[in-house]
Image (cartoon, rainbow, N blue to C red; front, side, top):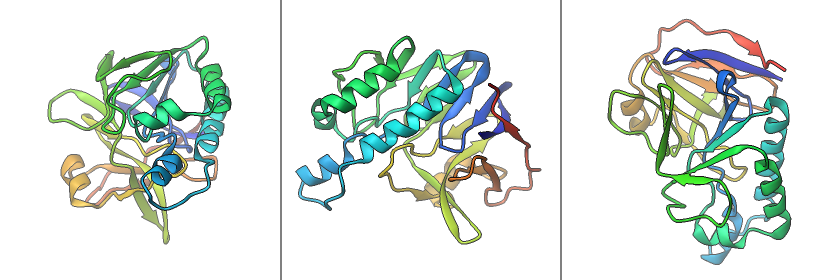
Length: 232
């Protein structure tokens, strides 16, 4: 599997083609906006009926990323469940699968706007966290620190195809794509994202192929960083 290698706040990071972020020096895997239980939440509220397989599909993706990176720590950057009822109603099979992935790792649940309350799972829940120079939170905030967040589900379009993407504005801000199987997205040129990122930002596309494709954000004149194979 290939990944997109870049440096953020002086730290070498890898954007994986699945939408996860890996910090090799810390053996840390970061995912955002899993939205487990979205189909059940929509059905519960009389919305569109979707096949109830998104939790399984997202867990499959997460299991593959964990197998490939062997992280010692995992951060879920909020909206891990589509609402609190989804956290309570997770099936026994999916609960066992998730707890198996968590076993032997330091696991952190950053609170999101969909799941602000306590979870019935192990791991540590907190509003945000800091590791070294990096702040991890669900929604981007004003401030001078280097932050990594989610929430906006950014997508970018290249050659007529839209794909979830990382948004990167060195040295201050990075926004991860949504990791969940049934999540929608916001165009990276949307004014809300443009205001957060500013000119010179990059969108790093994800996709089915095993590489992340750099894509210049509106106004960017930056050179394209290199791609890199994921270290084993």
